[in-house]
Image 1 (cartoon, rainbow, N blue to C red):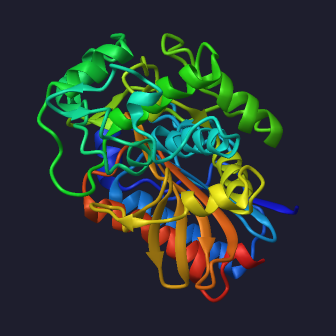
Image 2 (cartoon, rainbow, N blue to C red):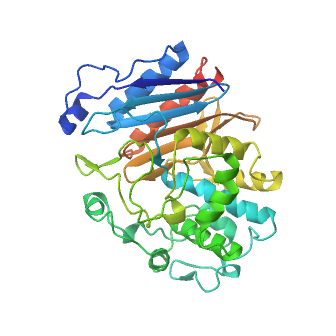
Length: 386
């Protein structure tokens, strides 16, 4: 598949002031490759998003009839080095799509039933004020309709988290701590607790030491995803070339190295935008699941916040030309928007993965990121259709 790689280093004046670095104009660190008008327009949109949202760097891959990789900003605010063209990033909750795929493969093998109570697989584990595994099903864990509280209130945030980012968290303690909280209100409530439990369920059903082994065996290796992995939580560094990740605390704090045990199966994986494109492309085209399980995965319910609808480990967000079906993710220092454009007939098309090196501050920032996806996938001369 032909590939075009473009790099642009445009940093807003406000960001320059924060970083304490001098950038002369909007000079590119590397000479750009000649590109089509549609790719040029997409590069402009990516540069504008970096400037408007105030993120240090961004890396975008769109995989259609051609593969296009675009970069903007800087990969390291201290040195000013460029974003690596296929840099590894922490993908946060995009991990959930991998975990859900493994669970649905187990469903297809007859080893897990979607509408069975969680108690059947994890006896005695889900008991507390926040929920009861005897009445919560596997489907509800996958779809965030279990009502289980999120462990977020148990964890530090902002600068306090940055100062404690090498602290190790025990998964069972997080689950039990969350179960002591009040149940989440409403029919749909996003909760990492459900996916912490699903990681545990995979281990119980398969007998493997870690859910990570099943993700590697069932998804990563068959698809040849050489740069996609779930790290040992105490392996703080990202292996391979990567942009550095930052939180605004206020000002930018480099949190690239961190212990990821607080996320576990809810969001600790590392990958590249190109490999995330490959994963979602394979998933939505039926290469990882049988038709029955893929249909279950794509059965959506109304969601909330930045998500229009949610399936079994899949998010759906509306675009003008169809729906972006995949899963976004945030992990301290990084944020990802990823999925496949599905047209009105339900047919999958081009894949997109956009990583930025900090987390959107609010819905306005998220919508600004979504505009990049709209330009990439829906403009009349979209790069995705080259």
